[in-house]
Image 1 (cartoon, one colour):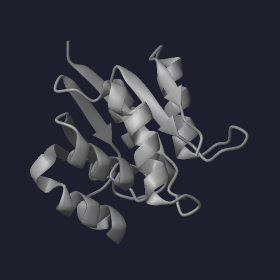
Image 2 (image 1 turned 60 degrees about the vertical axis):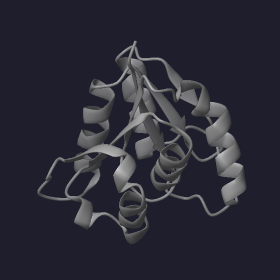
Image 3 (image 1 turned 30 degrees about the vertical axis):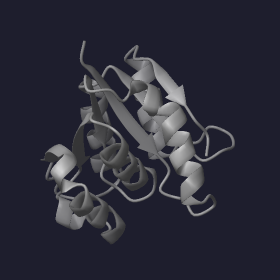
Length: 152
């Protein structure tokens, strides 16, 4: 059975070191990352870029990057992660939004969730907020999709 998983998470990742993220990904992405798994990642900086690099380097799962506009419009960190992982990326979906604002990011998040079986979210630790990470997790929950929340 092929399993499609959305990864969503904070862009603010400087409060932990890379080894911490590698350990989190091994523990919470690893169990879902087999050759039958497919991951949708938003192509932003932070968790998106870190998870992309971890999946590309540690799994045989399929990886699809989804951006609200184009890859060229993504932050440098995200573009670099995509370039470094290009040989492992199955596809890149550019939704080509006219403006890169909240509506475009929410549309990207919904696009990924609508094509997935579950959501794994890495929000900043603390109370639930209104971030894109929480919007994605909550949209998945509204759609009846299993979701795993790993505060960072």
